[in-house]
Length: 75
Image 1: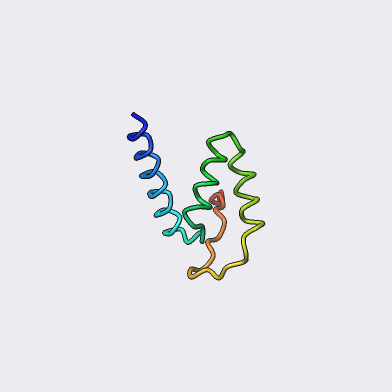
Image 2: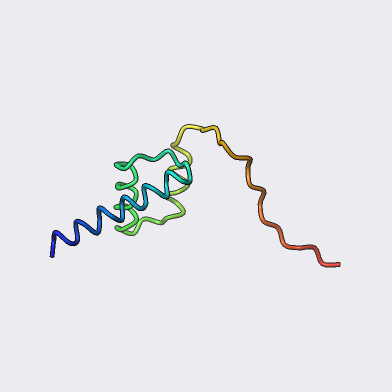
């Protein structure tokens, strides 16, 4: 039973790491696992994301910035 839980945790971390790489977050597996552990313990996700953004070094994006979504104008 514990082996299956460990395997599921490893698969989940690997999937999260792949998503992290696609999104070019710059997070390594260890950091990502610590963040997931904090979320599992009830840390506010928005506050944690803000902290990660604040502590992360500025990075150069390979994509153009995405403009904010605005509501369509009414005639």
